[in-house]
Amino acid sequence: MRRRLARAPYRAWLLALFLVILIASSLFPRSMLDMTLEHIPTVLVLALLVWHGWRRPLSNLSYSLLFVFLVLHVIGAHYLYSNVPYDEWSRAVTGRSINEALGTTRNHYDRFVHFMFGILVGPAAADMAVRFGRIRPGFWAAAFAVGLIALCGNLYEILEWLLTLVASPEDAENYNGQQGDLFDAQKDITLNLAGALISAVPIWITRWPNAAPHWESTR
Image 1 (tube, rainbow, N blue to C red):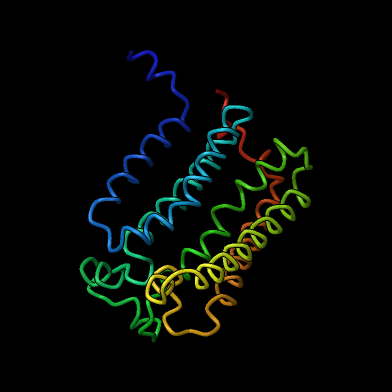
Image 2: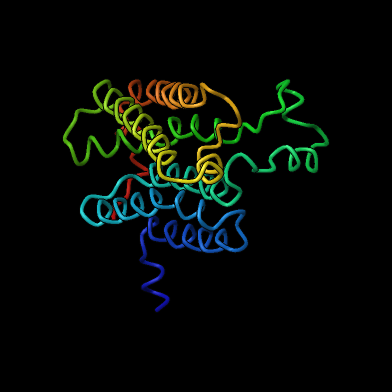
């Protein structure tokens, strides 16, 4: 049994740890309905990663970045994004308010995660394009990553709009987290794209995923 666990690939350990975090986050959520809606994409992404990992694994660095993003998403889903108490955490740890430093009263956790989506998912998207789509590393892999992230960001905002057509106003607001901002969708899309463009620079320059062979998955 110990030998089997020792031979388990890195991605399997990350998956097990994430499932533990996901289950723990389901305890006493702010809204079980909205958290469930938030995790429909989570389950689909996990299924894709497991299927893709069985056929042609990504690099360990890609899985690590995806893990960080999914944990950020789990935190947002538990608190419904607009209520993530990051400012209280900041005051408790550093004695300073992030919102005061930014000169705002809005909860910006959702904006932060949209930005980090581009940063953290970009390398994995390029990795997948090279390994599975046979796209050349460098510029074309970076371009694919930016395009995929932009597409996913736009589709997600469309799904949020469709939800408002069928859900109650309260549930729709909890899920979308606009906080009264009429241009919330446009700002979210812009942050997705900004993050993707930032991550595209090292992908292009280093010809990722060829840049770090010591991070490659071999199992």
